[in-house]
Amino acid sequence: MFTAKVSGKSKSATLKTAIALLAVLFLVIPGTGLLSIDLSQASGGGWDDDHDNHWKGPRFCSQTAGVVFKACGSELEDDFLIAIANCINVSDKDERKECEADARDERKDGRELCKEQFEARLDVCGLVGEKRYDPDFDPDNFVDPLEIGDEVDPNPYFPLVQGTQWVYEGGGERITVTVTEKIKLIEGVTCVVVNDLVTEDEVKIEDTDDWYAQDLDGNVWYCGEIAKNFETFEGDVPEDPELVDIEGSWKAGRDGAKPGYLMLAAPKVGDVYRQEVSWGDAEDVAEVTDTTGSESVPAASCTDDCLVTRDFTAIEPGINESKYYALGVGLILEVDNEGNRVELVKMTTP
Image (cartoon, rainbow, N blue to C red; front, side, top):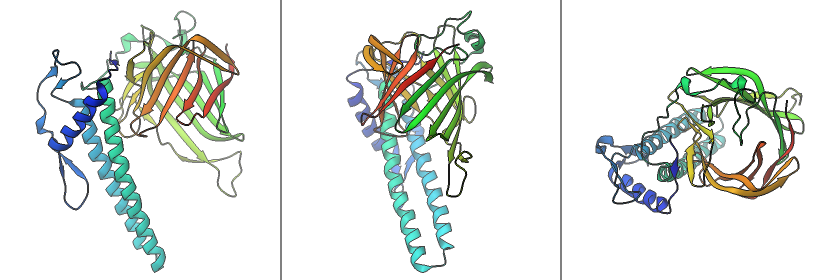
């Protein structure tokens, strides 16, 4: 398993790790503001049993955070240079200067975001530990998704029963989630395809196929997604929006991406787990904060038995969502930092 217990000492330990890494593992490259990494510091080690939460080399999680930080800076410089190349080809002098100024401002903001993401990844390391992230994704450990709800009991907080549909509303959007009859083979594991359709004023803005699998213990795994994002531009027919990108898409086994737990079979307060790992693209993490919560939305409610998680990602530092799950129903509510709610308004079962 790759869950870890949250400890009150994790935050301070993470800050100390950050300071140590910045002081020892990284060297500033003059004139660029970027950081270069020296990984020669890695050495054998493990948990120090005499000092709770103190890790004695090697810090694989923190080293990963550092390498991804460097990649972030390199990508930022590439984007900056391409932007400058575009500016060179702007004929109007004033517009060209404005273009160059915008490019520099974007690079400055990007550098700050890279640093914030680095610190957020170190915070995650303080929660999940410093071991390598290499989950056991063995096909023999998974059930046939087409038998869930029949011969196989579904996860009580995330029932992947074919034909089940949840409809959510919030923030001016309507989100329809459907467990389809489609399957997809990923790294030898048979996953069920769950469609997630987001509309605004009845116009499609996102159409995603998520790939989930349930193991023999009842844990639900997140194995990837293809996310199609749409926009309607002036002159377009609203019913036929334009596909603009597939940002956020990833698949376990491709480009080093790895699956994670979407929902544990028996979650306990303090459990922390990675839900997806595709460095720089998908790094969602969840922490179980309560198993006796209470909430009510139009289509469901739970009293003293709601599972509550804090969901976050280092890619968007400082943003947290509280998610409420009802037994036998699944996700019923999402609440963001500002208190905005996305509520379950309808659920249908086969």
